[in-house]
Image (tube, rainbow, N blue to C red; front, side, top):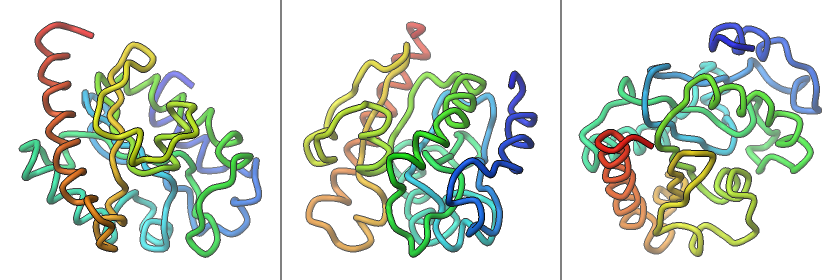
Length: 190
């Protein structure tokens, strides 16, 4: 799995977990394969399952807006994916065994993309990549060294849409932190 398109093609036929029979299609990822910035969410929702693209619904529109406002970037300047590539039924969180089964796809993606900064969106993605049990309110607010990169956990955009206290301001601050980490990584190498 050395090429991103080949990884995506192989993932498109995956039937390794119980999510495969209920999906419309695999939602692999989208964006600039040479980007230094990758966003990782939890899993596709109904809009994403229908479109085959990550973060295309209300949460995606909010993410796009905040990334533009706080980082001066567009979707075309980064890459967006999820911890699992198939929609969990009823928009539930992915289960640990589903994430473990899908993890090789995410690892292959990140290995091929080789970003300098990874921003995790919400509890599920942040806990999975950092291998921690604390919730997002404890994890966010700082940068973590992670696999030779910088990882910045932040709230999932759906938390800001629901009006979760502090989520919008926290996301904005974390995106500024990601912008600073990206600038530092580009100046000084990893």
